[in-house]
Amino acid sequence: MKAKGLLAVVPLLLLAVTAGAVELSPLETLGKKLFFDPSLSNPPGQSCAECHDPAVGWTGPDAALNAGGAVYEGVVHTRFGNRKPPTSAYAGFTPILHQCGGIGDMGMCGSMGGGVGGGMGGGMGGMEPGSFVGGIFWDGRATGWTLGDPVAEQAMGPFLNPLEQNNPNAKHVCLNVMRTEYAPLFEEVWGAGSLDCVKDVNGTYERIARSIAAYERSAEVSPFSSRFDIFWKNTETLRPPVRMINSMNKSRFANRGLSDLELQGLVIFNTKGNCSSCHFLQPMHGSRFPLFTDFRYHNLGVPKNPANPFDGMPPKWNPDGVEWIDKGLGGFLAKTAGMTDSSGAARDFTAFAAENMGKQRTPTLRNVDKRISSDFIKAYAHNGYFKSLDDIIDFYNLRDVLPQCNVANPPLLPSGEPSCFPPPEVAENIDTNDLGDLKLTSAEVAALVAFLQTLSDGYEEK
Image 1 (cartoon, helix red, strand yellow):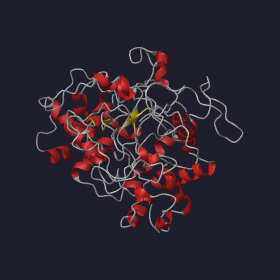
Image 2 (tube, one colour):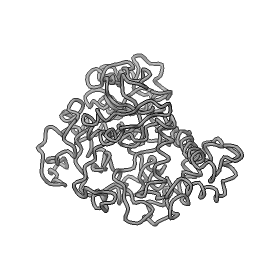
Image 3 (tube, one colour):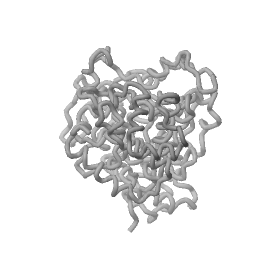
Image 4 (cartoon, helix red, strand yellow):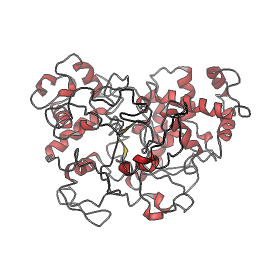
């Protein structure tokens, strides 16, 4: 494993402490061994966990990288991807990428009760016809169309990405797995002959990916063990339900696991802050607790990160150089001509590319503030432009109020608030309904941050 500084190593040492209490199935155990195995890159030295570490909520564990470009280096020195590592926790609830009202919808796009947060509370907005839902990666390209599982398809990507784990092909990954001490477990889980690197390379590679997906769905990675989850359990029988919380009924939810400040933050989250419009405050897709995402895609008008190391990558990987723009979902949809799913049904969405340029996947807010220490820097948004919850909330609050500025890192006011914001990386399709001028006070921002801090897993009741 390459040395990335002490902060990159400490989380892995903590794994046995933070996750040891969960009993895993043999399939989940196999997935865990694959997830944490640094020998599966080319050259050996980088596991999935180097970009998805449990100590920081299954995302990037290097504070120095997070403070800059927020994009992580691959196993080959000087090669970088183009986006911040998203969390791998709770990804297992993600549906196959589909269009609301189109093939594959299966009724999952309808409003599931309540109105849009930002008034009397509601916690869950409806999904308008034509919007895209599901898929993994910031741009949704792990669709689930091939395997029926976006998480397993995502697990296939980094192994073969020259900017990440750099294996030349699936057979190379398979042979590396065959050499491990857990190779017998692989055939114990999947059956005799299942680790076949000659006659069934594709099938074996799929089983590798499905094993990792099983681990990511396990209670070790997605445990629902935050203080908010205790609050949710303590309020499940209350009426109105939590998703309807607002300033008029919040007293009914007092003394149920959240402090007064945190409860006020939850009210703001579901009303004035408009957060629950995209980070739904209701269980979905079989979860008992809210997942804090709508699985959709939005262009929030986030500025380009001037420190993104992908801008300096060779033309082989980035022919646009410093002019590279992250097109998000629209960029992926533009490449879908001729694509089909496992049933042979067409999945050509090129006609919808333009209206989805710049849109990125809504991340879960679970573990959004989980960190190694209070001074550990996490990065926010798809490109890591923001460096704290206060920073990104200020942007949501003031984006359409403050002037635009032509500098990459604008000066702050004496109060610590931004004086202006750089222009958006992609100017088309910006969401002007859910953010931009929220009129939140500094006290309300502080309350909102306090609530978001209750979403970190690993809380133990006293």
